Image (cartoon, rainbow, N blue to C red; front, side, top):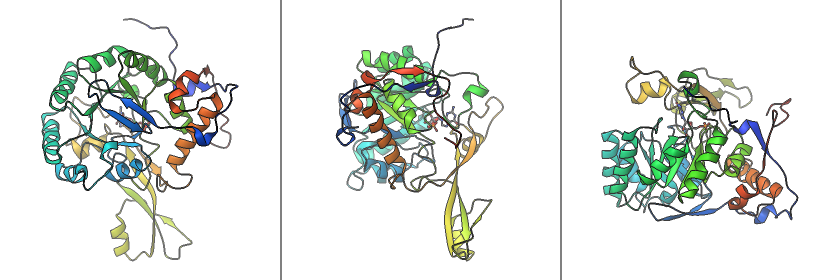
Length: 377
Ligand code: 5GP
């Protein structure tokens, strides 16, 4: 047994110190980045925010909508091949450069990737996603995918320590390493397994290792507000992946809970999930979305849905909760505007003229209280 005594930090442990500078005008601050990837040798330009490959948020609708803002989406891995083929067919969908095909490490996942890729000529972005990226089998799988898809951008994870970053970039030939064990909003790995790593320190240490090799990292999980995203980029993340911040938006899929009204004034929230069609058939003239069931992809709900239920050697490592309906991601004062507005504000406070300059302009201050929450956060 060993104990590491160095202090490790999470988003909530720090704030970013403002700096005297010729503050750039927010209008001129650019959030677009251009990356050239280590192993695929291809380039991508856009705003490096990614919707998580959870079955509620990693949807095709999300992919299409976020692409309008040059943001990305990791499609969840449970879409059937024919739907994916339809979506990835470039003539029908111009947003594919900003969408990842996600797969796990089962043979059946690999076969689906091959089938879809053959039908659409090319898969530009591939995300190989497992809860525990620390196995040799995982590195071998990433390598095998690289052998078949030489020009695709491959993102692989999750891990949270630098030695695994080098392993996946060099042996696995991935381009982007996804960082985060246990920080997610609906994750219980740290409770069930007692395993993880404080996310801000994980990003700092993993980004350093990746950048030394000309690789990239994606900070995955734990952002609860736009300021956390700024902290992730300030710490060196090249991409930031978000689950709960996108959950509950119009572009999500899953079990919606509705509220109904006869007169458009008095609303009743229904306590069970019904479809809109069922409510229309019941004669309700006014129907609105109220909330969405949001759950971890390793929660009992997801395991029951996709893996035929828990078995005796596996515990669920995810929560099941509900998030309020939040409208469309592109709405005025919606999540996209909050994220981009927040990041531009961070850049202005520290004197960065672009997102690219944010890490070198960032000084974190350790603190015990980042904000005043007397009226909520
Ligand atoms: P959030 O942005 O909601 O804090 O975190 C999203 C991330 O949480 C996902 O991208 C994924 O890495 C992680 N995640 C999603 N579901 C689960 C789960 O059931 N268990 C664990 N350990 N992590 C999860």
